[in-house]
Image 1 (cartoon, helix red, strand yellow):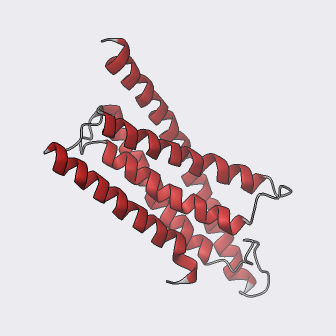
Image 2 (image 1 turned 120 degrees about the vertical axis):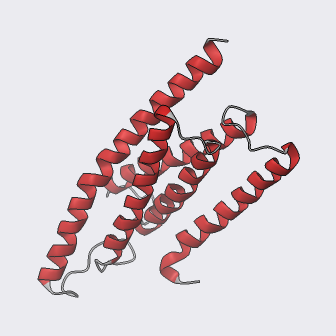
Image 3 (image 1 turned 90 degrees about the vertical axis):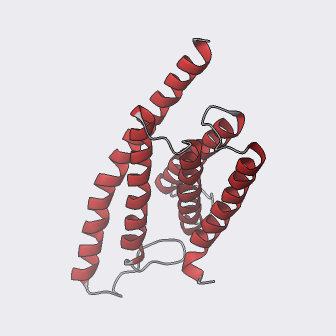
Length: 184
């Protein structure tokens, strides 16, 4: 296993295990699990919690440089792992139906995951210490400046899409509770 890709391998393994569980539920029930049944809700809620942890914990750690909450590189690996596994669980929650607000939320989720892979690629182009701090002088200053500009541009796209994703997800959850629970 390559050192720089272990979070991707763990995410892949987790997705394979989740797919196996999903396949077992299909085998036992002889149907694709509905988003509103116990399995569908459970996988959706767990996936959303992972996505929420992806956003909040990494962002808090990144902004709190004085806190001794572990290395930034470990937090980035956590961010990448939960940023892949959480959306995958939410995708399974959809029951492969992409209508209305839930479909728009799924599309935003897909965009944010693809954007995350792009951001990871840009991030890995900037030489860093094990703590994630940039190493000066290893690249020409022009190439380092360009990578920083790309990272800044990426942030200006990635973060607002993430905010829109969470707003639509909370509206979706509120609507699901209202229509599926309170109206019955």
